[in-house]
Length: 387
Ligand SMILES: [Zn+2]
Ligand SMILES: [Zn+2]
Image (tube, rainbow, N blue to C red):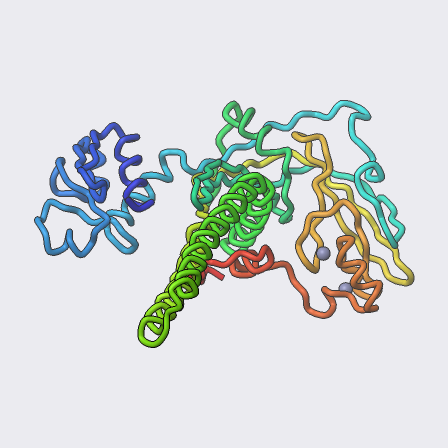
């Protein structure tokens, strides 16, 4: 059963349709309420939906295929969006009580520069909260849901998902026109969200991976022992019966085949125990939150630069800043000499050692999923081209 088929099944169930899997689960029967039938463009209210497009196309006409590029999927996506898979809310502004804010100094360290506060002002900032479903498969399966919140300035805000999911349902829905949100910006936020979610998944999976490694090592040992025992028995037999000529050649051939079989079995084990990770975005929530921006003038040697730090009134914390070379979130702010690029500790140490700023030399945060996966040493199946 494909994700798309499952998606269609859930969608029809959530819109009060009646659904039932067929044996084999590569299709299901659906009885659709009139409105949904019209919106999905189906001519009958009782249909079978299948992800086997070839079979469906040459089979009976009441089997409707779902897959990329099918009319059914094209029509189903807007219906799903309207049903709250994506939503936007706006947190009401709460006047901050006197002196409940922390100082810039409490949150940020300035490694190699001085700063001067040039004032603060109140405003709002958009935060994008993605929910991902992640599954890791090897000989066992591990599933979990992850929520990752990325600010419009491109940093991960790990304390916000819980607060937003907890309080957001009581806030006003936010209305905006599609043109107000740039596709490029949203794509960049999504890439960051994937990166941070993968980091979290990796941390979470260490126990799972250890179990898999242990099972793998145990199976390798079993196979080695099994084949080594067989080989020893054959060699013993050759010795004991003092085999010669054709008899000996036959035995030697058998031993050779055993060695080859052992290699094949071990290679199959590598496949069995390779951890396969599947990640699927489930929902997206846009939360417009009140913030206070602190404008800072950074001074380093003869250079000056203005930056603005964001104090979030929901988390009551400063958001981290993104390293301009590698994209890492950081509270420790270093700056290069000429352009005063903002650098995280590890990029700053590259700058100090090589006397060359990584950002000035062209390093940029990953702009596509390929870069994110490469950075984390993950091999992608069917490399994505959504760069
Ligand atoms: Zn960096
Ligand atoms: Zn630089």
